[in-house]
Length: 381
Image 1: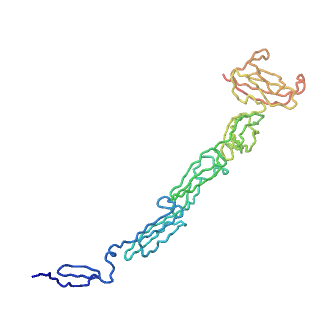
Image 2: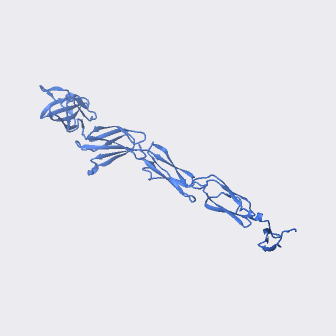
Image 3: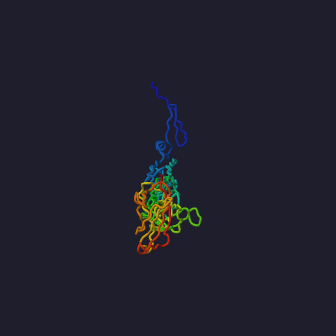
């Protein structure tokens, strides 16, 4: 007898677009009619988005030149915001978003562009106004400052100028913004810290007058003389202002000591000062009234000349008359020793008085004018 296998009639059921066939022999899965293949659904992937940014990078995430944003999208069926964009205007931060879809899958990518092509607006400022007449005459600090509306100011420099002297001095500085842009600053000014010179200061005494003479450097713009005691009872007075190299002071009190300060100023108000003291003389010029002289000094006595005088009579006293001579010029060199009325004399310690008269015509006529003057000096012990 032949034995045949027994088959059960397969059963059929539709579930979610799949046909399930089963029997005692097992389960078979098949796609329903008109449904997409199962393998195509299970292998689908989301779109890929890449971005290329072209521009010059600065600092801190900023760009400092035009920026182009270019999107590349692969595997999409739809997209938005993925066009190429170029930035030419400064922006503190603009965000771009590219989205792409593939059926039910979605991909999104964003970038933020910060662009600052503009250097900061900067300026150099001196710490103070010019010291005199538009000039600076001592070290000057110059500071740079700036504003920057986009990325903001990061830093600015400062510098000090202390020479050399220059009518066209320059201090350079700079300011940087946070994007890395830099702006230079410049300040031009006049600088002179060197005082003019006053040299060769000396005095020439006269009859209740003194002439003060000096030399000055070419950059001297003003000379000022202050005298103490001053005029009209003042402690001191300005007696001269100008550009001359000499000054004659008059109406002095014979025997009084006067202190003179001679100051030269340049255009930047730098100053150089020299000083001297004089004892006012009358008609008898040297030695000065009351001047102290060493015993061995070769003393020359001088006085102011008298118009049309043919000679002079000089007389010297120390308790009594020691000398009487008739020089023809307004001066006499006293010898180390001399003889008068049978006695030998020389300068010894003590106070001496001397007098001068002018003589006119022949000496034998003995025609004298009014006393030229009288004075004293002291010989030290």
